[in-house]
Length: 614
Image 1: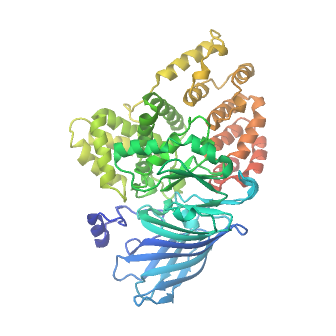
Image 2: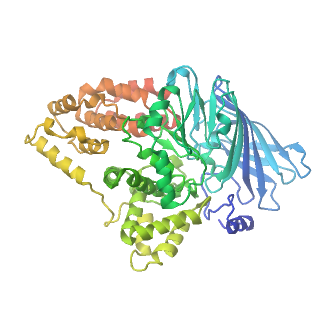
Image 3: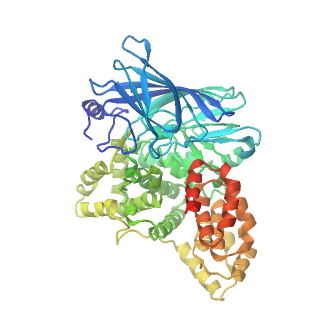
């Protein structure tokens, strides 16, 4: 769509509430050409007994169409009580509203009609227990076992399940909130959490930087607080607080290194919220307060690249945002690239390259199974749920594209380009088409004869990987391959492998590249030598369980059941369920799933339900 006069003036002024998209977001009902919500105020009670948020949201409105009198918001499974609006005379009036029939993907369109152009609109509502963007956990499902826990996951379009909102990354909004909980429960949000440091059940928050709605986030539970540095801290249940601080105390170093590479961190504090194991993702980049899975607390900092990834989003994603979910690679490809650069700066080149190689190997495996049209960076969802956009395509293929550009132009020139890109689109949203134009003007044409526009478009718009795509390799992995082959050929005993010196990346490469037809004797030999079935590293355990299921190794099943019933992170469970079904263990897997399902997030439930539905 064309920029309206209002949006154009904001863009030229560099203000934060501009709508930068030039194509329509198919996943929102919002009438952004008529009106933009520039600030939200939430006043909500956290009702653990009824598993609902109840209260109101107040929208501050900027009208773009002088003739418009209607506000259209996105909702999903919300009960709307009433709508009030503030008119020109600052008096509050009742507004008429209609809630349309629910669409399976987009939810229900909420249309509010005013007699005049309202300054503010206040929607009184409550969420439902089945809200896709909230998970409610009973005390027994938490680490403390004493308090309930609730948290949100608004990406991609789940904010609408707990807030009536213009739920599109094409717009940005500031917000404030008053959240009330039981007195012994602490609430936190993706905002200034100063008001959450005193646990009293009545919390006030402010988010002064404009963010897309999918970054509005809330959590509430038996949370304690501990600082790691002047800029970083951990919120967590007491049982995991100290271990989390020890695991992630390099976070400040990561911030400092990224500041030097890509410009000053723009969000004030960077704190972490440790969630229960049911959290369906590794992390979520909610600004000022990244949400983190406890499965990365390995005790040896071997999985802290996840923290680097969520921190990197403070530049790519939170600061510069994809305008639609078909442009997701602009968030995740850049973030994966920046994450790896952070890891190189903090932990060295060798570790960074190992992580590149592991991710690239995973991408090549995915390319064998995914539909070809879905291997394009600029994905066409054609009405599908934007959750379907999340795979290693936007992450790793996007990262490889940027590595390709870095290798072609040289790191010095490419760093200048990336830093200026973040500065140019700071607090704005853009489409892939806009990025291509920017790339062509500021890198390709600026340094002619290096990479053609056609080559860049091949990466972005064509399926698969170009024939000259980078294929990162690690000398450490080459050595492991040689040792593995020697063991398989009975030329070297397992005990001679220098595994006590291996990083988790070397372990993952070793396990992932073992044959999928190993004998029971070979599997038992591996297990006896390295105690893999009882591994305490969640990533290594997952790799071993995948190998065991594919090889019919029965000894693993008691530990596998514990893994599946205590972890809800989709990366570590969905593929296991698929493998179990494919290897004749459907009945066993289904029985385990019935035990585990109540503790899984709805996103994980949806993914696994689909496996058994087939």
